[in-house]
Image (tube, rainbow, N blue to C red):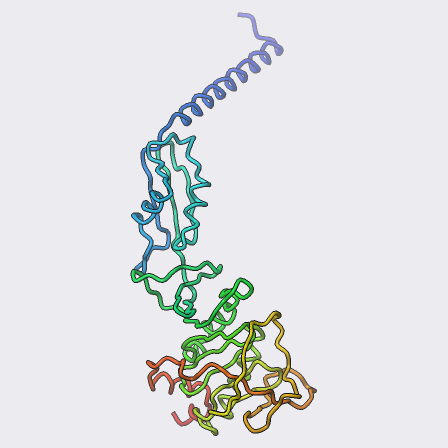
Amino acid sequence: MRKLTDIQRRILSVLGLAASLAAIIIAGVWANSQADNAVCTKLEVNIINSDSSMFVTRQSILQELAKLHIDPVGERMSKINTKRIEQQLSQSEYLENVECVIVNNHTMLIQASQLVPVMRIFDGNRSYYVNSRGKRMSTTVRYHVDVPVVKGHFTDAFPPSRLLPLINYVENDETLNSLVTMYSVRDSNNIFIVPCITGHVVNIGAPTDLDNKFAKLREFYAKVMPLKGWNYYDTISVKFSHQVVATRRNKALAATFDWASINDEPDADIETMTTSDTAVVTSSADHSSQRPAAAKPKPEQQASAAEQPSNNTDKARSKVKSAFNPQQKKTN
């Protein structure tokens, strides 16, 4: 038998490679034609973050699809627009994220996560939950979650999500988390926390510079409140630079509030300061070695102490007072 020359071997290799490529192409075309003709026979729905507080179910997803006139079962797979299904389901106020995928030639999978509230808003007669991205969800009798409560009115310019730095800061501090029962918002520069220690509210101002503001509050609680009494002041304001302004009970002057157009918190206006209705305590928590004498701003009509929840126990109040009062800690 004649031996193949190098050229003949190369020709045979090329022909073999060409035959393999042709087979692959033919198989691909056949597979695509089969996929184009494949019909969806099954729809699977998976709720990712389902738990004991579950309010989104497989049945509710199917009902939402029916409202949107979407029924993939029986449809050719090539005609199913998964992106459109994702976009339409994502518009539901109860869903936080939706993913729609084809898992094989006959099954479509919808993976959805229900909205995770981070706060509950009470705005007049309205109440709704808000997630970390600011999406709102109407309250329902089928679902309740223990999240921070906020009372106030919000706009597009000042959405509820602007409070997240403050809420997260409080929740990450064990003592502050025990102290705060709810939040009351008058405007973007007057945000109040309502403590479990009944008798006063705390004006945080805007939700910025929180380390400094809460350091001043801690110092005021530790050094002033045990001496004056926990019911002596109606409002404690830490919004101003280098000072804490405490308004005596029944001495606050009336004032009206408008939504601030800017985020900056102006220093106290010395032209409107009073001397009879406020106690101004210069705090060492402010990191400024030299500063002018602290001015005493005009007291404000603050959140009423009546807004505070009535279900606070003496045990909770005692725990918080002890945390802020070093002298009480020593005696306990």
